[in-house]
Length: 364
Image 1 (cartoon, one colour):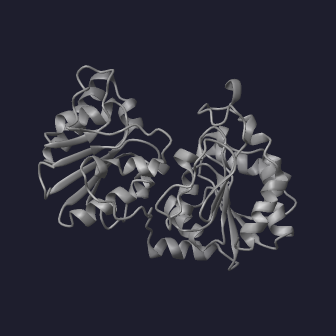
Image 2 (cartoon, one colour):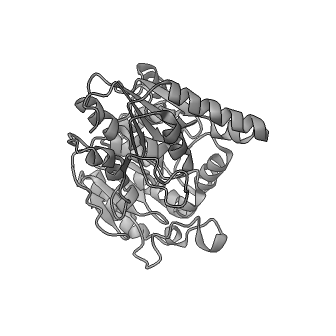
Image 3 (cartoon, one colour):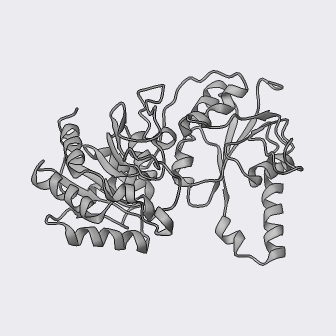
């Protein structure tokens, strides 16, 4: 490295909620290596709850994509320039762009940082040589591992691979005001991307099974978005039992606090799945278009991913993934043939699901 003791470090992650949560091992490792450095993170608006209250984070810089995108052309250009100038004014010694794309590369170019780490942009002549250290491609590695690549390219040690999320006592009190049972199963059946959801009848069968066969209360959560609430209501109409429905009533922090109290979690490939794994709450996740090798729930007690294949049922420690073993899986598409519905998630075996849930209930 060109500078052994940086004063200020910026990590950029302009992606979604789950992506941001998986940054926490990079943040904690950098703080361990450079305890006196100030570590800032630049994120898309709406993802900040994944790193807020993290004791290792000095400042969160929010990029309000939807607001800037809605501005007239010249105002939009000026907003982008102001955002870049704000980052430059902070005089970072190290700037780390953890995703591919032009925005992070542009900010790195204008940052004035001595050390700039990111993915080489081969298609943009102006940006292809921005970074002093280029990150390797993901290949078949877990996203958490790719987030730690900046340490590897700087020849720095990796001390831990623990994913963490933080909330307040007020969040705890809010959750306690809702709960009427000490032991429950947390189910989050939805994603903002509906093509990640399983069949409504399958999910209703799961909810009823947990209550009638396992004698466990079920608590449902979902984001306060119309399409997610509508999905929950569709599932509930098919249920024979009545779970506690907290859909649309909780913040992400409160959902995390709720999840920590649950016996285990059942849901689809979404940010709440990653939150559950960060809480060390056992996860049963249903995967379709995305691969567990990249996005499976990470077990904090392990240092190496156990998702070794591109498809099919897999485990990592206490966490379990159920996925069809079809040749087209994972496809990375938003549903089959433009339908926004993934056939591979409509056909999951309810027997395998119930057997897996029973094993998790026994602590296996």
